[in-house]
Length: 322
Image (cartoon, rainbow, N blue to C red):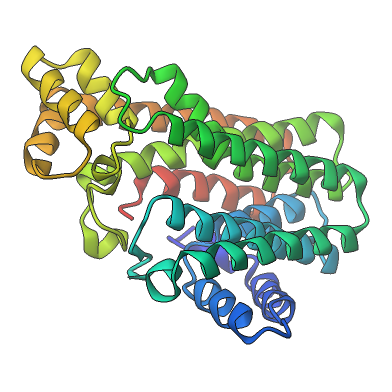
């Protein structure tokens, strides 16, 4: 399967999901549509709706209901992006100015609220209580993960365990909700539903680990955001935590001070320290381990092109450069 082939096996579904998104963005308030359209049209990888489509089809379930679920998940994700950019005071996402940079914080937060509400209206339209339970719980956990991360800003004593709790909430939870809800909508067996739920969790963790790795190994042009953003915000991500734990006293001290002060004045020095301390290799190894565990979960699914695409997508998650 060629790179991006995991999109092609559900290309028609993807087109239909885009149409649903455009239709559901309509509002009698022009600014809502303007901001909503701006952030949705930025594209991105659309991994979460892709996971919905691949998971459902892998179980032999497709059609309008699955497409509506995929669009619901994308609305939910987009709303979190709008809120995250305000919280992080981000000026760049996917290579473009953020909504808050263009329109200000208040409209961005309120349009994020609109997208949240719309996603729940779409969920009601699905008429599946198990799906509503999964997604409503996921929404709460995501919010808790973001608040936990916020509470650890500039906290150099943050442990790897706490970091894992943060990324499981703020990132992996929506991956998990995508695969799990698709399985429930498809009428999967309890074993298959649990396998897909766990798959989403492991894949989401691996994806965030690579994201945090690329904050030091990536470049702004391919990432579509500023390298070192997490460091500038004082976020204690795993490369920094591992450097403080495993690096030399000098490396640990440099990182500790950078977290406590925020800002990325000595970004190159920090990048050199996390590389020399083996923290980036450690993070990359952990990401590969989680992807291997994710792929093993797929053994319970029927053998078909959709399962192959899920495996290929998992491998892409750790091999990517942006």
